[in-house]
Image 1 (tube, rainbow, N blue to C red):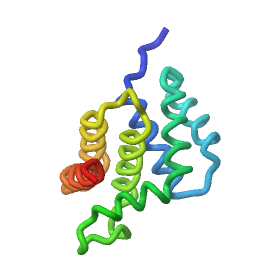
Image 2 (cartoon, rainbow, N blue to C red):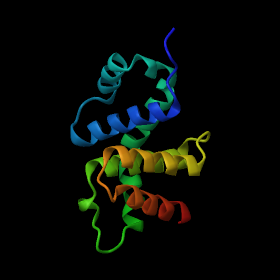
Image 3 (cartoon, one colour):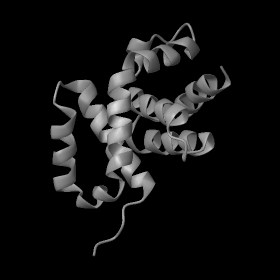
Image 4 (tube, one colour):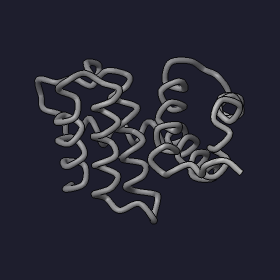
Length: 136
């Protein structure tokens, strides 16, 4: 029996899938099956991964509106990188829909993803946007 996947690792897989779905029109289930081939340990968290991937896909318009509502006037949504956008969509969906993920954890995990996958100013930007969404 292999090592169990942590929720943080599952979140990273979900982020990768959301990013891929934002850049192409692949079938989400096809991408999930590919991810399972590469990361069989993700089976430990497959219900969480499916929940957030399909949830973000189905609610992308509403989630994007929440991001737009808290952006500074000089920062149009079109200037947000695909990686940061994927992180924000994942975190907001988690905050609003995943009961066993505390808000602080969702925000901290999003900041960690931004440190790993986005530009240098992204972690503070992600923190600011998510704090704004939570306080609305």
